[in-house]
Length: 159
Image (cartoon, rainbow, N blue to C red; front, side):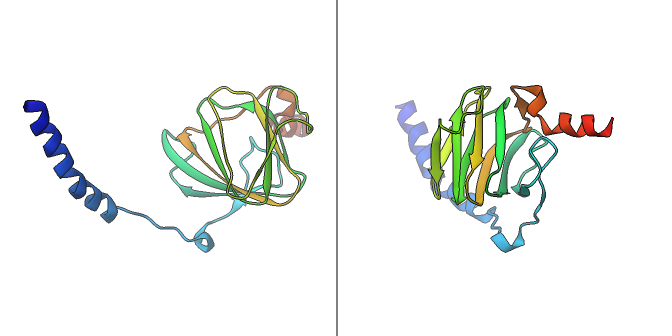
């Protein structure tokens, strides 16, 4: 009987909790996003906007990236799951530690993919593409081949 009473109380509380959650909503229009260059861990040429959260800190985040045609992100991993929705264009995703444009799958507008924590994967575009990435921060990227890391390329140019 005690379990039944607890279950009934929890179910009765759901509408109130839902109403409270609705009061704490946030809406962001696409034209209000502030776009800027991709962070140093990504190849140059992309534009990124933070929708919510802070990808550099612990906690949930949502970012969008505008990727030009011919954009490549070489094989890499992340310490947390990466969740990507294609908002426009086509994003090609493949798993593995060596870039091969003959492999993978073309994820078109409205499509979604998930790369689990520590999974080696890579991606590229053939047309201008906008993706939305969400996950738990902090966001980090580790390239399978350190020579592919744009941060290393910048360091070698400065020397």
